[in-house]
Image (cartoon, rainbow, N blue to C red; front, side, top):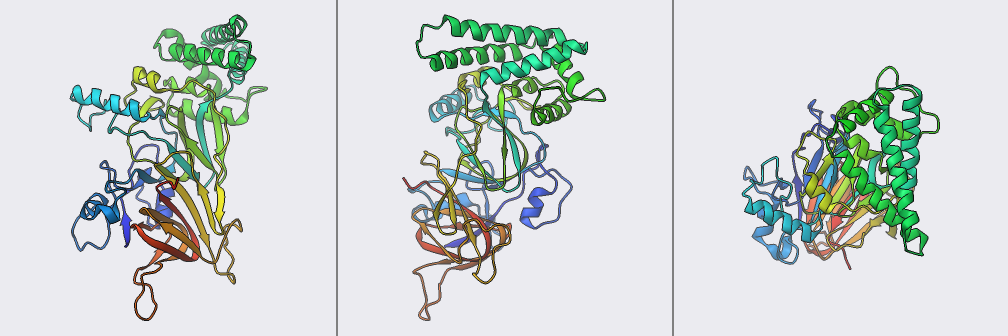
Length: 445
């Protein structure tokens, strides 16, 4: 079955007022619309269209016939979202399965309601996630090389001291302590492999800085005030030798979250900038925060978020530290591959999901957006259910192999930009027309 599904946008403060309405082809409401969930997660299941007044969700549909509509007789292991990022999300990490199971059991034992703001674990699942950019996307992602952090801290501290900025002493002291700690740790290492010694020292240095950042001492408050004096307001000027992009990020974070230690944490992270069509894969335990842009996201079906800052919401430092990975991460996109003509696939090494972009156009009418990997028609196998989201143009979706006596398909859907289909398990589908869609399904391993 080809079944239209939809959901109402979720209005969070970091959302964009116009990005999601533009995709959904609806008038803006004036509210910041942040996410649209397209899945069967209990927190906000998608609605099934054409039910003549009956409120049927994707959860209900799957329960009606789990063999056809579910995965292995159960719910979907993935969740698709449209993200409209008008401002920074919270710095956050997501747990692995064992951490999620333990955290959920603990909060259940403490009888913390699922809708309580103090609740961190809403379910027992892990939450790796993949975002493909529809517009340029900027994000904080993982820990950068430790020497880059030390260089930037030294540059900021020197600038603060030279300019007589109030609070410069804590910044200078932090930069000095961190550099000494790292170099001493490397020098004292008994490991003959220098790269291993440096990575162990880097993790210890990051650990020390996080302890300091979340200590809630006067020294941290003074350091934040110094950063605000440098990066925000009439006196804000570029620092010689400092990255323009990082200057802009700090300026935004300190403007929107002026007293939040997350701004200091951001100095430890990579800044990733995605062009449209590029992707970022976030594994469990990796620190991240999306800052701006529009994207299609697919993740393991979970709502487990452990925050590290840049938010008025609950921040549980002890849980954060138990889940956060301190290793260095490469600041590069997760590459998609041309899996067939017209199809680009992103398939991380997990079983929960894979994401595929389909671009189709008639030979006589070239695809306006880009010439990259476009086909007149695409066939896509559906051994498991698929969530399809059209992001450009208008597409014809047909189930192959299910035809009437005249040879016409019995299952046909015309899907325009902003519409979504839930495609049940069955024969492969054929996609034609003129446009672009993203298809999420279970990974085929």
